[in-house]
Image (cartoon, rainbow, N blue to C red; front, top):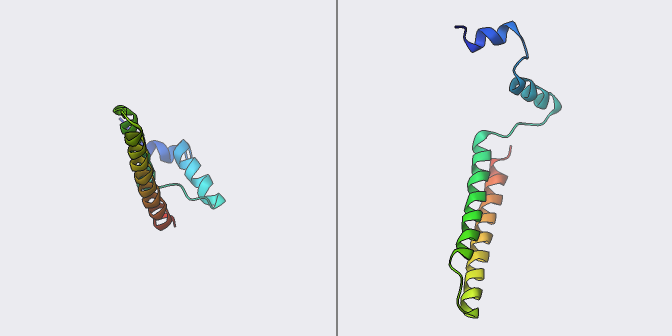
Length: 92
């Protein structure tokens, strides 16, 4: 059985991922690292879980509705702020 490197050396630029990264680097666009994409996924999942928790136990009174919405808004604000700071420092 032949390994990947020997097959790739016989057919240069046959790998679509390699071709795409070469095209992006020649165009001046840097590909997103996997850790940056994973971080975006984690922040998005955190916001989704927060919204599901908001509707998971329905409030019984107007005061509870206000408390739940304010708690969600505060959490949303903190997570978005952390995400913006993170993406600012991680972008090259």
